[in-house]
Image (cartoon, rainbow, N blue to C red):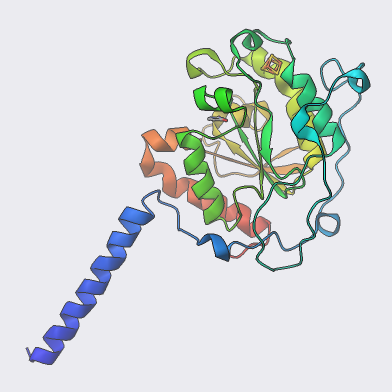
Length: 281
Ligand code: URA
Ligand code: SF4
């Protein structure tokens, strides 16, 4: 073989090797990596793109009667949201939640509606953009979330962040909450009665944020949103609905940490969501 062709083949092999290294070392989470600067804000303003979803009935949230009298937590001071222009890359920053979410958050902070309240350090309400077009619903806070008062800050949360960035969003462009707001002992799955006691908060959150789509992370969230029927074999990757909002159930990131071979399935599910939201794949 002529020397020149040999050199070229070696150079190609080198380049492929480099690419492979990049994929395994840097994008080892199994999701395509996107540079932070490339992340675009959702293109369409919500008023143009969503159908209005009625807020829950007044009786929905626990102990709503005296909501006006309850103190609002210190972090709940609002400022006007940033102006976001269409398609222009802007740094992600959280937008303060509207008052109804403040009220729910203040109630969850002192809630004793189920047994989980006795083991909590803080109740963990939500993080992210309360005007998001996309909401992720997880199971319940773990040790780190209970300490930090913020959902998905541990290892599973870091993987979730990578999934969000791979979808082309900034970490704080989406809204993230859990089925239960207080940490279950030993990180066990919440009991049905705990999920039921906490459901009015979740319902209030979803009605307020009114996203264009919800991703249910794991079976617990899928069940809590009423998106799994008895004996249903395939539950992930099929559209369902909660209060008129499309729900895509997929595997929980904590499960992916133990079984990374299922990351491909989750990425497929997230791409279906991206298509629904009109985002480039
Ligand atoms: N797992 C969840 O389901 N939620 C969290 O907030 C953290 C881990
Ligand atoms: Fe209240 Fe939910 Fe906490 Fe139970 S888990 S005490 S219902 S906030």
